[in-house]
Length: 480
Ligand SMILES: *Cc1c(COP(=O)(O)O)cnc(C)c1O
Image (cartoon, rainbow, N blue to C red):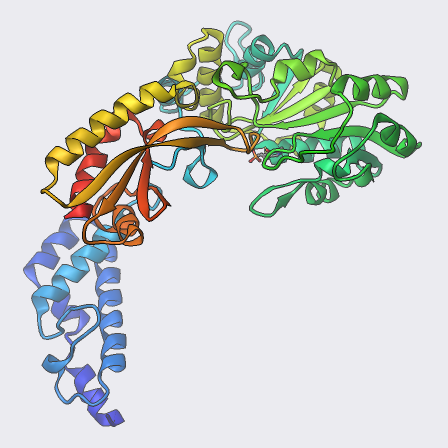
């Protein structure tokens, strides 16, 4: 099509004013921001213009255009609908709930730990009003924001002192900067990990101003390796929880106690990055994860861990340990740049109080980890039965299978929790199609599921019981 023809076609498009003068659009602009409505109208017309240019090859008249968006440009009604849709999208939050049916309890992409009801209640109560965040009510003078969580962290971990920063990466950065800027940190080659999303221990170390002194080999590091590396430039002995991988077979690393004894001998502090921050022994669940209290009892001067992994609270990095080194970290000017806000303190405080009450099941991540395979199997059987009953005959094959849930969040990777999976095969659609429909097409709340052996599999371990009706409704729509 020649350029003048295309111009003629484009001229047949309605103007912004044509759309804005329609009664439905006027009503919408009066009801909400006019600016949003104008912007939405412009962008819908702009999109149409692009589609006309794309689709106009060889077409003479606008009403013959089959536009990819399906919006027939002759129809002002449909443009109005498109504008309303664009307005609704502009005003909807982008961050929204999803249903996690993956069985990965601490899924970094899905926001890690869901917060306890008590955490939300405390957050709401203190954040919607003024609070004593940095005010000592009894003394009538300025206080410290750390005091709220420090006393609880001391009770729960046995630490003399504790401070809270934005996340564990910030905690590591701050501790290394405080103790080892301009000097060396000794760390085993077996612990130089990438935690995920490109976050690597060596990079953090470089940013902290400390120099990395690697010792040992990937699979074996001895206490003598550490000792040989100590020089007058050494400032800190670092130990890192290997987090998301495991070296198996011919491996060794010294016990934390040995590292502590070495540190004492050379007056060097020992800092352990624990990663997940397990506060209670979960070995009854068949889950072996280093417990914070044990590291402190073994003599680590400082430990750090995340707030939103196994701890089950908000995103935060906790530095705990002996009074003197924690106080030194606290006095680092960088602490001011990395500190947390009142929302985090409120949610963390309420979560730690649940630990103090030993009310572990009120913390969603812990409740999910502690759920037994029998409990999940009972829920899965009932869910499958209801789903079968609600579906037309032959719409899907639904089976219950033994499977494994994953704790995630930087806890040891090869430790899984036995679970019962609901495997669904649609009669008319591939597993990929069904998975996509659950995620984007059939529900306001996206369902995130896994695919295994050509079936969509759902693990109810990470689905809240109150989400089950929503999940069932989405499945019925997706399988229709
Ligand atoms: C997850 C993890 C971190 C990073 O913690 P964030 O709270 O995500 O910053 C650091 N070290 C280890 C060993 C981890 O597992």
